[in-house]
Length: 384
Ligand SMILES: Nc1nc2c(ncn2[C@@H]2O[C@H](COP(=O)(O)OP(=O)(O)O)[C@@H](O)[C@H]2O)c(=O)[nH]1
Ligand SMILES: [Mg+2]
Figure 1 (cartoon, rainbow, N blue to C red):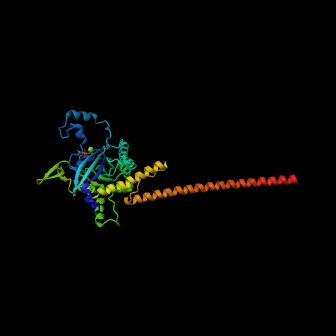
Figure 2: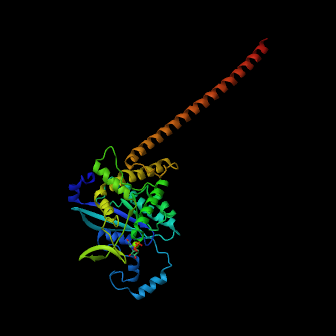
Figure 3: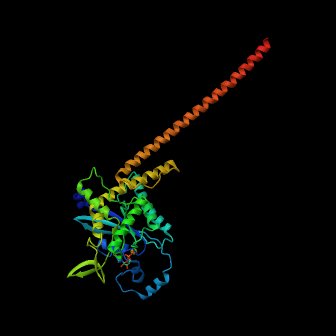
């Protein structure tokens, strides 16, 4: 695969990747992360509330449980905090950072959530921007930019909610948004298929530029094109997470047990978990990072700079969902066009001023002529 061309160099040094998980409470974000990294990296909210925080595997503490019940109505403070974990993927060391975000409720205070998340994303860009403009680089500087945001859609089976559309729409210009359906086993395969279709129609209708495994039919090789096309066809990925293993015929598999059978996490017929995992952590890791740096960050930087130079007329931050690779070219063209426009405006203004001055001169000339004529008339009167 084209994306693995840098494999050898990566193997020696290792690579870093940051992902963020966003979605409504209870859509399975925490479970997904722990399934992804194959260890209990994040604790569930109920775990931290009901158990000794130092020992998440301890028994539920009745005093803490009572306290949690009494506090349930209190709005919990929003805390976005990154957690690091080391993985090895295909012989490559991956230093993965996971940024969990507080789940939002029923859209009561979603604006605060948007703000919180988008300012987190922008803050990471600002840090790089500041670092890039230093004369002497800080050797301990950490690049915390988020390379992919997994947006968890609740398995309602209906359509996207307004809050889903709004959030993906607003965050897409800042980060690679990958839509996923959490707890996909809540729907039947037929329901899931119809739900996926409806979601993609909405995403298209609202022109939300989600990460769609971009490829160039002219430039990319056939295998890359086929891979990307297949991954794109899976959007939004259906996710099943499970932190426990189940024995099937003496073999331990990760899955969820139901009266009618077992849903296996790693079975591609049951969920898209494995394919999403391989895409993020292996095949598309480099692509996600490149788009973040070359396009999303570059876009932010240009906006920020033109905002500080040009004042009010900052460029629109919404992006059309076309091929990402052509976007930075478009951006430069747009910038050139704007500069040309400014020059043209100055030219017109100067021309207008010249015109005005000329008219003033002509008017003065006219009045001089009148004066002359009058003087001449007076003179002739005088000497007549
Ligand atoms: N059916 C099903 N339930 C899940 C899945 N993932 C998590 N859950 C359950 O859904 C509840 C909320 O999960 P959690 O990961 O804490 O959600 P979060 O609030 O988004 O972090 C828990 O009871 C999980 O056991 C899944 O893939 N399928
Ligand atoms: Mg959680």
